[in-house]
Length: 330
Image 1 (cartoon, rainbow, N blue to C red):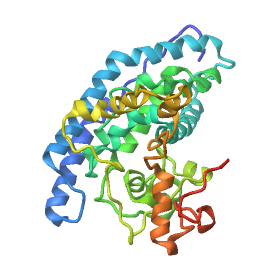
Image 2 (image 1 turned 180 degrees about the vertical axis):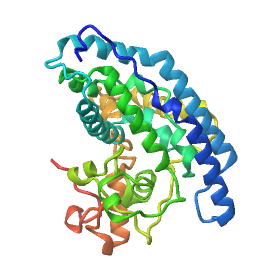
Image 3 (image 1 turned 135 degrees about the vertical axis):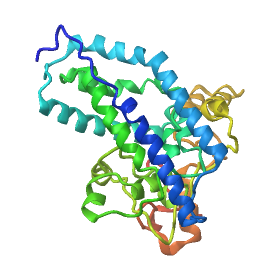
Image 4 (image 1 turned 60 degrees about the vertical axis):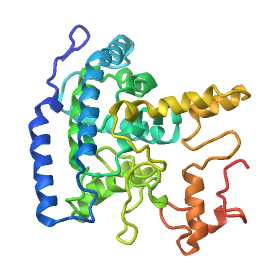
């Protein structure tokens, strides 16, 4: 089908999935109560309410601001190199390519503070359950990361096709936010993102920082060197490195933006230092007074030298005599 004069109208699959989300959360809550899973992250009423409010705010923000990014991509459509149409294989290709796009967005979100400022709220809960999946950003548009979809549009995937297939990606990611499911059949764990893999992603244990960025297919992490296995001897601890200790959804949504801008506009900095507070990884500081994920990993290896070189951790040869991680170029 030629899309040059037609804008397809596909259903929003996430809206159809809402009853499933509610039912699944009730089933998970029942499981926690029946198994008396006191050692699990479990539910905490105020935390769960915060996650639900964050999810509601995300939907509202999408309705209000989503038209901006979608309109920009539709405008870009006129410059496409191909028009791939609406064949069945186009939807499969769109799903796979956009899942790869999501992997790189997610990886950037953990390595660039400007994007981390909107993504951090998803990691802000110290609990890990299905409601955590709904703890989504209100400010995603402002990072400009929708530009990562531009190459897909130029290749001939209509923005409506991309949005439709990404809905399935989001629905898939809901069920992996749980401790009710342990490790799965090995072929599934090999190819797909699973609760075990995603628990690693949400963990603050040093070995698990900046790992398992996948949306649906964990093969991207395996291909690009960011995969770390969940270990029984080092079970995930959730939250962020410096927990914010609040259930106020407005503080959850904006705390890192405020902190980042406060750093950017502090007096006496050079232009480069101000840009560093915007675009260097979280934990970066102009005077080295803070610690990023590499520093925390190095500290852990210094205290546990037997763990050097394990997945997610630097080798002993990657440390200075003081135990700090070597930074490329230094």
